[in-house]
Image (cartoon, rainbow, N blue to C red; front, side, top):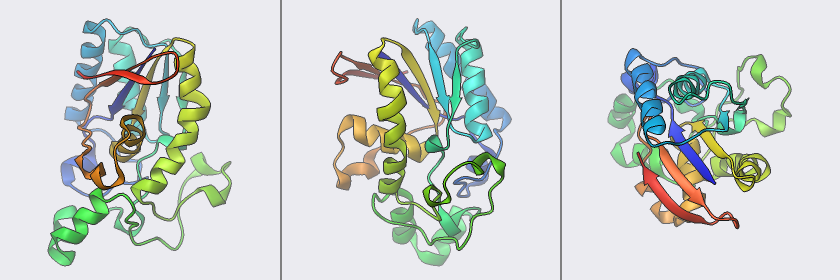
Length: 222
């Protein structure tokens, strides 16, 4: 009864140091290699993946596919969901973090990046493609705090991932820095004022083991 949480490999935005949010940027060559190494680690550890959940953004999708291939699990069901998307950074999307630090100061940027309830400046309107066309527009944010991101991620955990775990399956969850930070806060019962201590490096598998009551009994970083 295991869940493997993993953030996508290095993306073009990670390399160029700008906020990505729901922008659909690709992996770098380094990011693809990181995903390959992560899959090898999972295989070496003897973990057998039964099902995978990914965001609808290609950096997550590509990372998951590489991992599944390396872990001899490229035939398992894959489910893509907007609920695993990166946190929506509102007007900060596309902005260089270093430049914003120079303009607004390190303290404000740190609040935007690591705070729990801090909401970024909101966009007036989203300009997304058809991958969100079937969603109720009221579900799509104009910007999110980490707290709001957790509210978005939790239904996926409660309604789909937890059910798979109860069946004894090993679930791969390939998300983003903040969608996984939110889920880790929930699983590890991290206090609101300590969420800035949660760090999720690119392509580093975090393996949770659960008991029959879905209580965490072990956590291992590969």
